[in-house]
Image 1 (cartoon, helix red, strand yellow):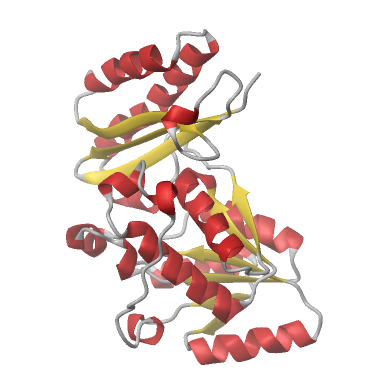
Image 2: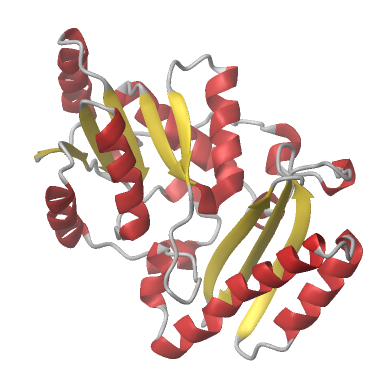
Amino acid sequence: MQLIQSPDEILVKVKDLKKKGLSIGLVPTMGALHHGHKALADQSLEENDITITSIFVNPTQFNNAEDLARYPKTLEADKQKLEAWGVDILFAPGENEIYPRKPTIKLNFGKLEEVLEGKFRPGHFNGVGIIVMKLLNLVLPDRAYFGLKDFQQFLIVKELVSNFSVPTEIIGVPTQRHASGLAISSRNQNLSDKGLEIAANIYQGLNLARELILDKKGIKETIRLTGQFYDKVDGLEIEYFEIVHSDTLLSEQISEDSPLLLSVAGYVENIRLIDNLYLQPD
């Protein structure tokens, strides 16, 4: 596996690969790699000639300085994993190389950025949009792979490439889970064994909500009963649980035949975790 840290060098490299007619898959990450990232890399390896994984903890998408400071940084271990997975190139630039000066551009994703995560993380999706555009421009991938645990981010990125006519196919990969159902996340590394047990209730609540919807309990009643379930879990503080239309993320656009997203965010041991379930209409 080749390690490249310079933006100029990665651009020269991918242009050379393109001249040879090779397809490129990009797996953008912030490091602290786990089996969820492996699923992204595996799909890219299957669908492309060359797979490039980027590792960059992007400061512009953190609205909480403590959250940024706590985010795990495990570059040496990550390099070993990528080697074992068969990734071709690791692009791991420094902050000054990606942001030689503070970004001045402001991206507006309309309603998509005003709901769910956007309500609680102001400026987050502007930061996501900026770093994704930088990576797409530097790596020139045919396909880029994103985990659907961050479903809102996936929609934001699709909106981004559509608006800017970026010729990259954005591919969503299903959430990978522990045996307990807990969504695999880099942030889980900061939880104790007890915290991991508590956090597993996040997925249990989503499963309860799914069953309630399938039993025709209605959206309001499902939200109420799921909220009661979460309230009884000691050590779990729910920030939001919402049921929205999965295309627009708006609850007011739900109809009987709408595809639904059950979305939740909460804290365990002061670590913020998110998860979701996608439900297609019958």
